[in-house]
Length: 192
Image (cartoon, rainbow, N blue to C red):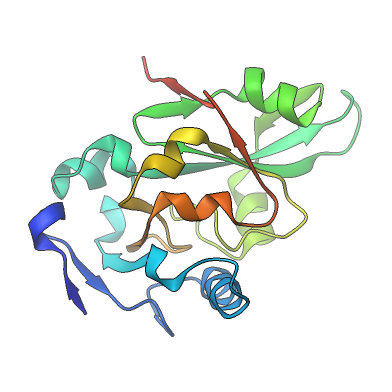
């Protein structure tokens, strides 16, 4: 266990190895990425615990004294090549002080005619993760994962752990090395 109180308020980080604070797909992906040398284990800072009702970024960050930019929000979407084509899944990861530009950069980058939020039930079934705790790590390998370039510049990034009552804490730079990730400048647009 690492004492993390000096930089993040009241949070204490726990070791992620074998952690019950991670959904199985997230734990499996982290184990594979580190064992295969895809990411440096030092970039995985740990796992923090929170109450289930604190999982939303807008509640979590103020509660623990974090800037919204330290949170990474993943959005699971359905994309359609044509209006009548069956939906395909994709994900977008942006800092918590922004919103993903779904109908602009996501649509343009993936070269699709339509982007919409994936139904919660479908996203949970496809990922093995809980709504409100979705992680960009551990998603199905065939999904495109678009990541805002600012994420890579966030050295202490709180992202979903796959379950609601915890956050995976990583150095955002690790997303530059993950398979299936496309880094997009300006993917996150200011809230407002």
